[in-house]
Length: 233
Image (tube, rainbow, N blue to C red; front, side):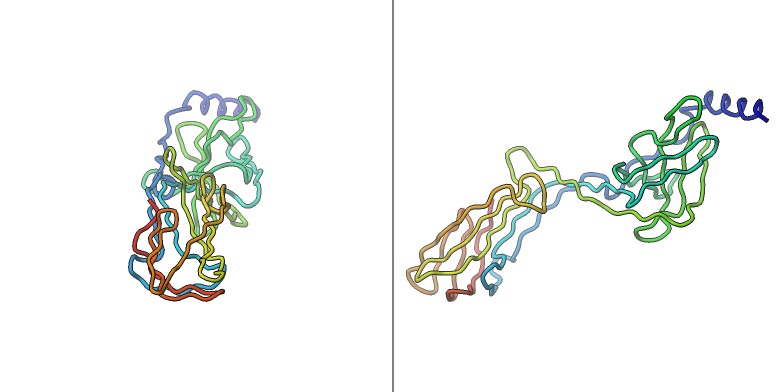
């Protein structure tokens, strides 16, 4: 029995590199994203803390992660995949899979030998896992199914932020108060935030706030009615 297992391991080792390769596809390919809020000329009403204008211009891709680690026997070895392992949406022989970027199949004699690809069974769940320690892709059912989540990875262009926001902070007498928020590293937390002030002499009025041109229709200490004529650049 030991001889048979050893011969099988040798056969797998000799065939390494012959299996079909997954190709990165779909959401894991970088895609350009441009978004503006509101539409030019659209009249909007906000209260204190409301978003006056958003401009986003960046490329991004998605990676995927298990929500819990798995350690399981697979073929003649083992699979070890942690929530820190990035999975890329890919195509393998025309089938949608999510593949690790590092070797997670561990051969008992040779150590880490191959990546693994998970096959989705439904939204947010994997029902099968595949790995090719040699020329053949082995497949194993996951019971129970394994949960996964997506993470957006933004990529900003040199010298340009991912997005900028203008937030209404209220008004005092004839002065409108805003906060400009700049996102340079992540889409969740601004890297910079600064107050901005604009004087309004009469209504209606056209004001420029750090390059954003706003038509002010009406305002109070706690609200602003306006439209945007020109976006952040």
